[in-house]
Image (tube, rainbow, N blue to C red; front, side, top):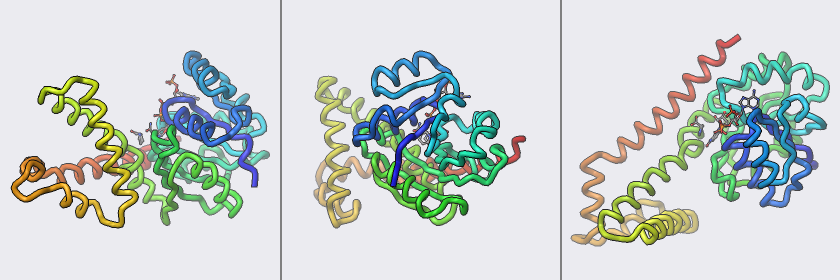
Length: 276
Ligand SMILES: NC(=O)C1=CN([C@@H]2O[C@H](COP(=O)(O)OP(=O)(O)OC[C@H]3O[C@@H](n4cnc5c(N)ncnc54)[C@H](OP(=O)(O)O)[C@@H]3O)[C@@H](O)[C@H]2O)C=CC1
Ligand SMILES: O=C(O)[C@@H]1CCC=N1
C-alpha cells in the first residue's frame, strides 16, 4: 500500500510537527509538499525539513494521493472552496486535523462526498510520540483507513474512535493535552527556582521527572493511582504536596479545563457547520 505523495495545506505548528515526524520515520522529503502563505515559514520548512513549500494551495496539490488539511478551522471553508474544482476528479484521501470541523462541513465546502479521515494529532508527533485519534467518514474504504493509519502511526500512537463526536473528546485530552503538561512543567520549574535551584538544574530535573513518570505509567501494569501511592510515604513530603493539590480540588479543575476545551470544539463544529 502506498502512502506516497502527501500534500499539506497550511504549514504552521501542526503541519511542521507532522512533517518532521514523518521524515524522522523515513518518509522521503520529496514525497511531501506543503503550501503556506508565509514566506518565512516556507523557507524554514524547506531549509529544515527538505520538503517543497509553495505559496499556492492549488500548485501544492500536484499528484496528491493524501491531502492533509492543516489550516485554522476558521480558514477551512475558504480553503476547501479554493481546492474543490481540483479535487473532484482526482479524489485523494483527505485527512483533516482541524479541530471542530465536521466531515460533513468539509464535504459541503468541497461540493463532493470525498473520503475524509478526521485526525486529531498533537505536537509531540514531531518527536514521533504523538497521540492521535482517528475517525473515517463512510466514504473511506479499507485502503483509505489503512493509509491514514499508516501515515499517522509513523508519528505516534493511533486510536480509532467510533463516532465523529468523540474527536472532540480526543481534542480536549490529547490534542490540547501537551499544553496542560507544559503548563505544569513551567510551574514546577518556577517552584524549583524559588526553592533555590539554578535555572538549568530546575529545567532538567522537571523535564526528566515528567519523562520518567510518563515512561513508568506507559510501561507499568499498575494504574497511575498506584504509582502515585508508591511515591507517597505516610507522613512524608509528597503527602504534604498532594494535600495542597487536594485543597485546591485539582481533579475538578482538570475536569473543568478538559470540558472547556471539549465544549469549544463542539461550539466550533456548530458555528462552522452553519458557515456558507
Ligand atoms: N497546534 C496544535 O497543537 C494542534 C492543531 N490542530 C489543528 O491544526 C490546524 C492548524 O493549527 P496550527 O498548526 O496550530 O496553526 P498555525 O496557525 O500554526 O498554522 C496554520 C497555517 O496555515 C496558514 N494559512 C493561513 N491561511 C491559509 C490558506 N488560505 N492556505 C494555506 N495556508 C494558510 C497560516 O499562515 P498565517 O500564519 O500566515 O496565517 C499558518 O502558517 C488547526 O485546524 C488546529 O485545530 C490539531 C491538533 C493539535
Ligand atoms: O488549540 C487548538 O484549538 C488546537 C486544537 C488542539 C490543539 N490545538
